[in-house]
Length: 135
Image 1 (cartoon, rainbow, N blue to C red):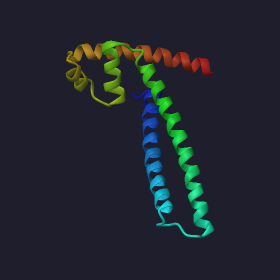
Image 2: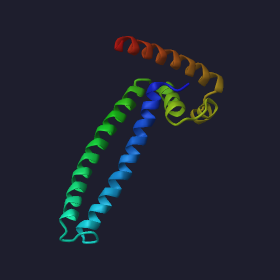
Image 3: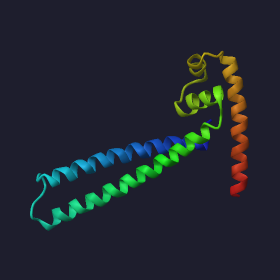
């Protein structure tokens, strides 16, 4: 079972990675144009360089916004304290099995399963509360 917030978090990471790749590609293209590899007196090339500068500004702004959103989700996860926080991060964010989580944090698998069940109850409660608020 994957919670909506876990999917949202993973989607944010993917979007940030893609935008970083796009930013790097656009920045390299702009640099090539500025040093003359694609620069000419041609009006079309000048327009392309201006477009790239605008694209880079938009991409940078979007990356900053997505990183703020991602950080907000991490703050939400961090409202869980201690071992619960570790279980959530390792299980739902890093995608580890409960067995691997137990080994990583040094607790028995039965204890980690019990805590995970309690965490799921809390998350389901807040999900239902959020859904009823949005209805």
